[in-house]
Image (cartoon, rainbow, N blue to C red; front, side, top):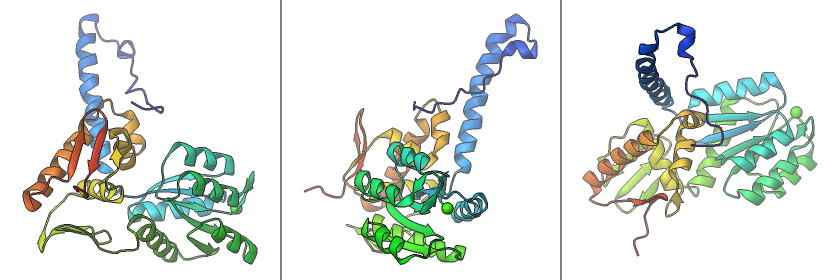
Length: 276
Ligand code: CA
């Protein structure tokens, strides 16, 4: 299903010394077991809403930032070198990239230039030990959204990332209003007029992803990758995407009587706010 497909539980039945007659049964069981393992792993990824790339070559600092941001609920990926980071931003979409300027194989400013060229709606936060005013000014001139000098408090980092995401993804609004829908990204609440629509975390993440990309077609692959990350690569069907979309669509339709989610058969889905 994607370029990074992982072979599902590559266990050789011979290793377990099963009698020949039991091999088909074993394979059937393995298939069911694999699906169970994948689905339960996928369900543990409940906090994913925004995907971040942390580009930092100091191992200790990178580890600290990632564990903190993952605890907050972000999906984090990392790169330790400029080349690696350039490949990642070319291959995947991120909501925000944290860029260290001094990298072993080059200058982080080159990465900012590339991100703003290929993905202008991706937020960029410069995290740099260099307190040089030049780096700060150049970074911001290249389109970085903010600058944080090391050392910094993790709470400060979180506040800056949040504010960038709010600005970049929600156009600076803390509350998103779409017809009768009112979405509060920070408290993760959704209302139809004044009545709450109760969503699971995953359904909320899905809604947030759709709203941030309103009136754009999202392929099932991009939805799976955004919400489930690398785990989506290991799954052999898109059933988990379909079932989450079906539930979200039903809940929104029940309360608003508006069918926001348009299914473009064979292509993907679109959250439609412009019915012109
Ligand atoms: Ca560095």
